[in-house]
Image (tube, rainbow, N blue to C red):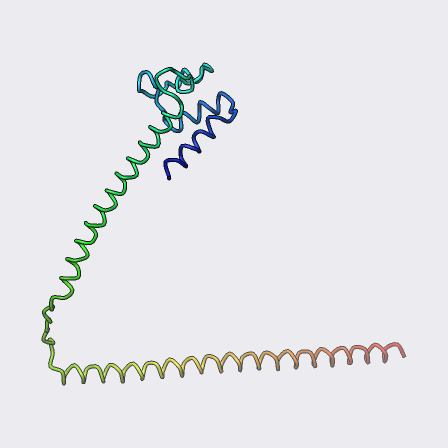
Length: 184
């Protein structure tokens, strides 16, 4: 069935009225060989505008016969690709079986003796934990003091600004009062 569909496709392509350049590109792309010499058509014959020898109907081979041979070659390549696929699948399965066998075998548990006795390492961990908690507490206190100092500094700056504004207002009031007294 697939061969018939491919043959119909090729027949439709070659029966349609294609420009000479398009027809030569199609035969070059499909790598259809010359019927008389059984070799690929030279690119220079196409560039001169000659028809491909494949398209010239000869008494020995017809276009349908050439398409049939092309479909036969396609079928052969397909079977070869399927063979490679089966071979690759077998190789993959053999590696998979070895891997599953290796997983099923019980592995030996490696026990490593600690360098220090458990009681000593436990005390060491406890002392490190206590030191870490102390350092974290100091860090939090320092951070709180810095934040409080910044808040106090901002508050003091705000009070200073208000006092400066009040003093400037008093200065302006005293200047305006002195100028009114001088005018009288």
